[in-house]
Image (cartoon, each protein chain N blue to C red):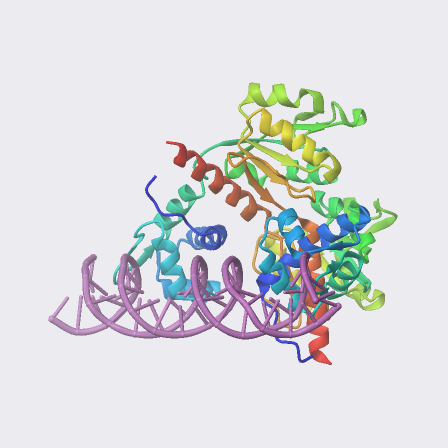
Amino acid sequence: MAEREISQAVISRLPRYFRYLGELRDREVERISSQELSRLMHVTASQIRQDFNHFGGFGQQGYGYNVEYLYQEISKILGLDKTHHLIIIGAGNLGQALANYMNFQRRGFIFTGIFDINPALFDRQIRGIRVRPMEEMTDFIRQNNVDIAVLTIPKSEAVAVARKLTDVGIKAIWNFAHVDLDVPEEVQVENVHLSDSLMRLSYLIGRYESRQE
Amino acid sequence: MAEREISQAVISRLPRYFRYLGELRDREVERISSQELSRLMHVTASQIRQDFNHFGGFGQQGYGYNVEYLYQEISKILGLDKTHHLIIIGAGNLGQALANYMNFQRRGFIFTGIFDINPALFDRQIRGIRVRPMEEMTDFIRQNNVDIAVLTIPKSEAVAVARKLTDVGIKAIWNFAHVDLDVPEEVQVENVHLSDSLMRLSYLIGRYESRQE
DNA sequence: TAGATTGTTAATCGATTAACAATC
DNA sequence: TAGATTGTTAATCGATTAACAATC
């Protein structure tokens, strides 16, 4: 691909654009200008135009952007037009919560399997899929065309499991374990460090309170 | 406070520093230089020194940083030396998962209550705390000195609940609902938009694959 | 004292915003 | 055509990195 590298900042904003455009679309809004979107999303119109232009001209002078078209284009950029098969490693509370969160299915993320080391959970059904023992994981990935592994296990086990996943050729890891995974560059990783997020919130509380003094 | 404003970028890095320092501390490492930490964390030593200096000189020339001291200082900056009482709004899978995630308790975030609109869940116990009906929420917040509300309800309800929380004077909202909350500036908000995160991962997969062509 | 390493200033890089010509 | 609004270049702002004097 000849496209120049898109910055992390732009990528991080795409899902939010996608969400707003989806809402406009649901309200059957046909077109929107960068200025209107700017007011709605509380970002500058200039940034919106710059962002969209990273991927080619989606708009039209004097008209603005066609909501449906832009929505579909961003959907493609995000790869939501493709189907991904995902498994969840760790059938604890969080793993089960994610398995039950059906919005992902809607976007083409197909929940295919869930694994745990705890025998008490084996054969329990979650959304019609039984919990399998960890030993079966690698074979399952090979046989079921799995792209994404969701790690919801303690950090003590996460590193070893990530290695296994890498060896079996997983494409991506959605990592909820509180540890930085060290994987080769062909494996994509997205971290969700919930405690980091809660700490940021704690910081914000403290900062606000100290300002009030 | 006379301290100049700390950038969002620096704040976002603090929890990660905190995590690494905690690990070093557990391994009873006494001191560390910015260069060693740089190698460990894969960030530049220069950035580490700049970041720490936003909050005052934690280090010592020719010596480096004392791990225990730095750990404690960052802990204070993040407000982890204070106790926060939190309630969870929405006793679904995610709400229950968060209620059961005990690591938060360890950091001073005390799980105090959980609420839902579904009567089938009332009086179910989660970590010894019963699920209460939503109607009791505002009184409960007033009576129990609640600082943080965790929103794990659908976005259709989130905006209205956020308003109630604001009215009753909540300090902070940890928002898992997939909507941007519009609250006054005295209410701190930290969003965890899981589907945004999954979309970013999806983008990364697509980008990598298109590069391979 | 010599060596190490911070704290901090200056240089660079990248991202955001402003401005406006192009064009629908 | 006139008005609106994009696409895009230039200006600004802020964050990161480099460099080095201060100092333990």
